[in-house]
Length: 137
Image (cartoon, rainbow, N blue to C red; front, side, top):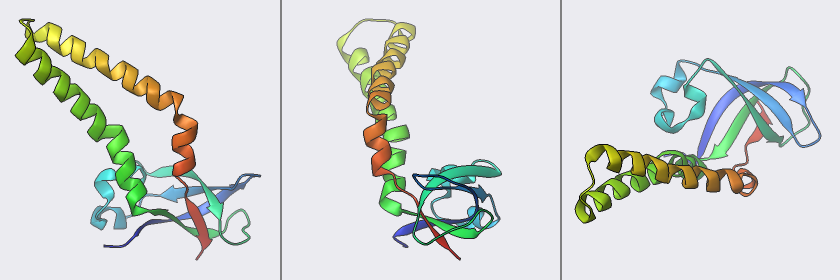
């Protein structure tokens, strides 16, 4: 398994902190092993801010890369941990209380609010861990 998740794109903007790359969905996404966890496979185009490894111009075709472990970390933060929190809350409340299922479901959904507020609060720190790199093809 490759250590990198890669997508081809075109530089659309050059800024002080990096370049913005437009990634188009291709048929290769359907064969990619990371397609289920990759946000680039959900729609026809995405814009990603990346750090250039070489000098770039607007319109350059580039390869955008991110470490595969960061893809797994994103899935963990966005899907796995919230699911475990939701499922764990339902299981605990079902075993320890006599509440009806509707109330248990409502309480379980409410436990997601503090989780996503914490994710939002630490967004800057989380974003610093997810760095994309762009390299000319």
